[in-house]
Image 1: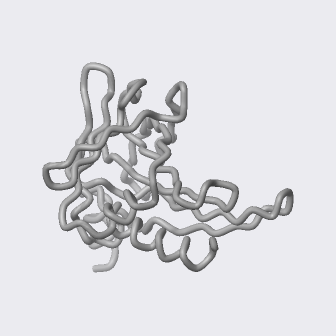
Image 2: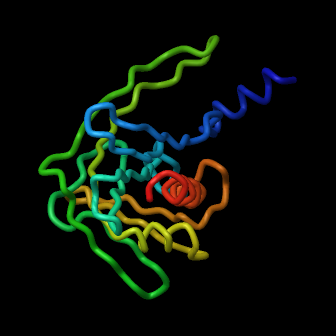
Length: 178
């Protein structure tokens, strides 16, 4: 029975690994860093992910959102768009080019998990934006990819969602970055 449940989860694309919060202290400059793994942005066609980053060397009111999309390169210019109700916010990446990487395919028993190509960019935002992503009932995310785009919702309260990881990130920042 357990094997059947695991097989069904793998076949439907459900994740068995929840995004983690990472807290570290640099031995080089003493900076404390809080970061997250990528969490799902529900409704996107390429499993868009969102992650958060902040350290004590950054201005107190700033953090970084890292967006990851599959199949394609994130556009330059204002390529991240957030929507809260009727309010639209646009952000330009701090990266000149997308970071592109590929995960290799692998077998789980007789099931082959296909390789994947990812593209990511980082955006500096005010901490109040992450607070809104964590608190608003519905927040939408759109990322431009040249002639196409990816969009999804952070309104889901599943433990692997962007909304859930935003809440955990804020808790970790409050506890570790003064």
